[in-house]
Amino acid sequence: MVHRYAAPMMDSAAIPPRTVCHGCRQVTQYRAEDGSVRPMILPGSGVVFAEKSPGVMVELPCPICGEDDDPGWIPGFVPPA
Image (cartoon, rainbow, N blue to C red; front, side):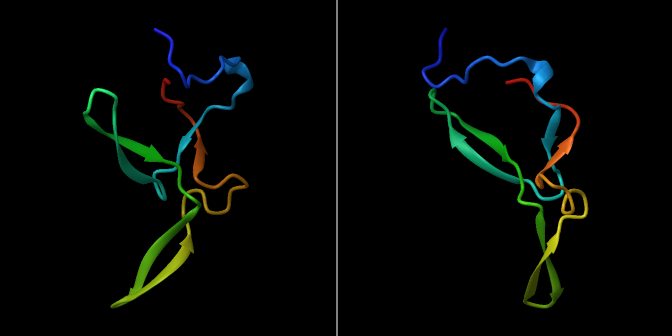
């Protein structure tokens, strides 16, 4: 089966292994072609929100990846496509 929007095949040795940061990732949902609703994990932006006092939210660097050159990603396992 060929997908209409499939990405071209790439040499896996050229892609550095990484996954989304679990400190600042976001989770959303999408509807698959068969109508089922499935979760989708989005890479973060390198920031987290914290409540400093009641009702006061501030944006802080993610404690896991906030100082990285490519925030929202961390080295490691790459899930299968």
